[in-house]
Length: 169
Image (cartoon, rainbow, N blue to C red; front, side, top):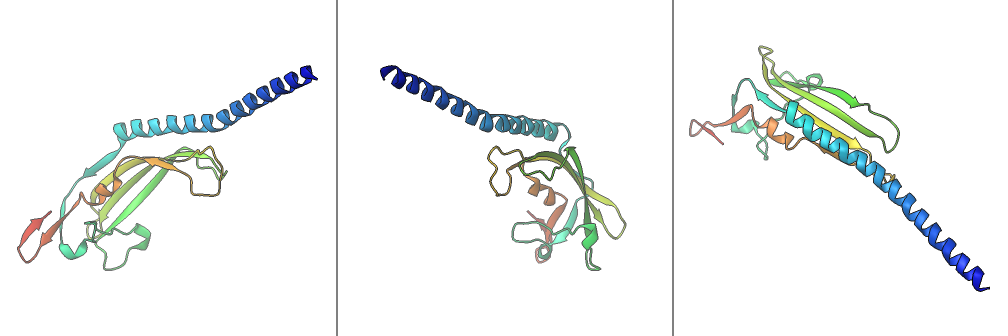
């Protein structure tokens, strides 16, 4: 009887170790892959990411929203009253997969053009990772990208106060 109790406790110990190891692999491998791709995003952002402003445009204060941003519609949504439009090209580095829990990496290249003359005002390159989460629950996947893309929409436009007749920040 004593031998059976010892055997059962040893068996339970090894089953517990096996379950713990299996759970660690299940969480650890996807987390490691995600971490590696996040480091790749940082590297690509440093090498190729960022903004280039070719022309700074002075606009009246009314064109800016509460956050100091100017709405620039995509090319497909341009109205006759719009002065600028943007294009965005997505390039998949680690291809987009429709599989739940997949890990995707892509490059986004956004350009802002003036409608009147078709001139390129500014462009921005950014990289992002989506998904790769170890726990498959039906929520939006995690993501990681280059820092502070919102600054891109502030860079080519400067507020002009018509009352004071001078640019404001």
